[in-house]
Length: 378
Image 1 (tube, rainbow, N blue to C red):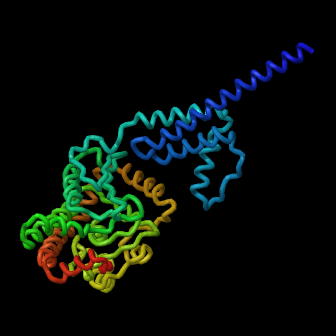
Image 2: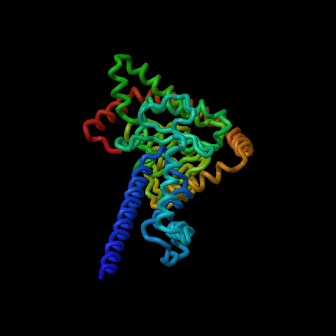
Image 3: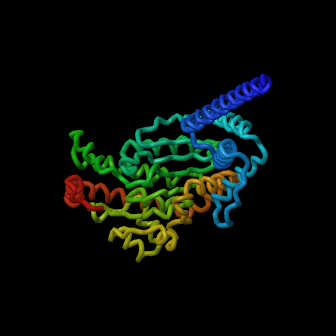
């Protein structure tokens, strides 16, 4: 009887040890999940999949689910990552998950990698895997562009164009919008300086001229990842880009007539050349909004990607493009651009000269005032 009692006590102790060890392991996994949220940058897709597989293995054990169908690409990738763990024990999976998170925590922040230009509020920039990314980062303002952001992008493009570790440029946005274009509050801030309207208009037009010129002459491939609506200058500048990938939730609009303004971003040259005179007239003069499908049909967009998988898909495509021989990319870009470079600069100059007049016109000033009174509709 005594031996039975001792055995019972021994079993209780063993059970207690197992429970404590499980609790400790579970707590460490939970901490690692929280630590992952604070890493400096988004890990590559293959690392994300490894983390997913290890987490599933750690929490559920060996994969026993059926592999998703051939059309469920994301589901199949996740299943493969989990199944790859094989007979790895749950404790071993936890240790591997934690080690991978620690490795990510120790990796340098790509957003601080040797960029000399000072970033204004509203912009995020990074260099990773030979890709230089500029991100509009004012989601609460629909990523509208301030004058400081214009100058920040000009400075960034000038800085990185000769860097050997940059093979291509990516422009994208944070949140639901790519960008809603020019922040109309720019004009309010300028008016408070006490300078004449004419001088302010010249300065604003010159900033736009320099901004557009920086993209015209950027020597490496440019890729726009249009994650949402692109309006105004955020739309017109796309005509200068080499590749444009658009979310199926994006649309494109240039409401210049509504604002008493006129085309910029070389759109008076690029839009008719890309989409034909009739469609360009609708878009640039009549404020027609193009859906992603319409934009692709007329050649304005390279490809449309479902919004649900947009981030993952464009990351894969951009990484593949950046792995191509950089000199070949640059010289191919040069040959394509040199054919129209002079025309682009001429269009940019004509457009900005007209903008000086438009910025000071009664039509534009009235439209801006109506906008801030809540009557304006883009």
